[in-house]
Amino acid sequence: MRGDTVVIPMPDRSAVNRPRDAKPVPRATDRDQADSSARLAPPSTRWLLLIHQIPPKPDYLRVKIGRRLARVGAVPIKNSVYVLPPTNEAYEDFQWIVREIAESGGEAFISEASLVGEGLTDDEVRARFNAARAGTYRAILADARALLKAARQTTAEQKLEPELAKLRRRYETVNAIDFFAAPDGATTAEVLRNIHHTIHRQQPAPTGSGRAIDGATWVTRRDIHVDRIASAWLIRRFVDRRPRFRFVDAKRYAHATGELRFDMFEAEYTHVGDACTFETLMNEFVSDDSALREIAEIVHDVDCKDAKFRRDEAPGLARMITGIAHLCPRDEDRTERGAMLFDDLYAAFGGKP
Image 1 (cartoon, rainbow, N blue to C red):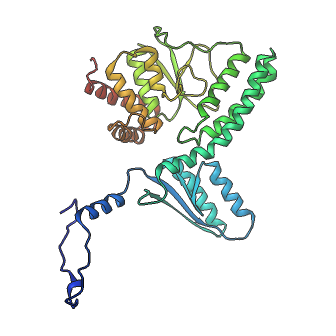
Image 2: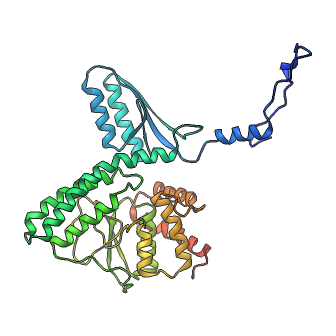
């Protein structure tokens, strides 16, 4: 018995009525069969697929659907087959497009699947996502560098602020569908931050200060998941004895003096290079804690999805965070529930009580 499959030996029917002088038919060895099974075993990565058939008329319909798919970040892997990471948001986006295709006389359905066998690999699919984002990032980056040059040569703050706002909106639009941290994304964000500081003649907050904080207001984007849940736990346990958390709509949020932002655009504490926000906060305040370092590697692998540390615990933590998100619609409840999870994980790695 192999797993849940019962293997029953069957007689060699090819031997029946075989001429006596015929050569025996070669049979697959156990190694061949094992190799074949290994090739056919489904990988752990799952993808959400939208497969459609669009009528030839009207002519504009195919272009319209193509633009809708591009807007939600989907990329083609074959003719009429588009892919997204399997998130709730992606499924909802695909549902609307399926409805639109059906109402226009076409056919479409959604499937979740893994890539198996020879052909397209998961890494190649991720590369297609990054390639789709690369051109947009490069265009924004070129305009941002030109604006930064202008900001350094003028003191007209009010003249440049609207241009910076436009660039921010362009960046946020592509960043929202940048599922695998495409090249130039982090560079573009850094240039935009430099423009802001240059316009307002401010300097970025220094890193590594480790200064004491007590009773600050910490602001982050609402609908928190792994990096923000973990960061809120770290802030409360190691950084600020009496933190107050605000969960905001990033598009409508206006920064108030004294507020400390984390894991959001232009935040005091956010992704730096390939480090997630949790790593940034840890390096700033408690970089000598070995148990935190273990947790940081797991959080990084879940949040950045780049398998940098290849932590075996990452899928389990991701599943636990998904459960917390389903059980707790309110971010305040996710923070509390997540704190218990990370307390347990910290203790498991030998963290001090």
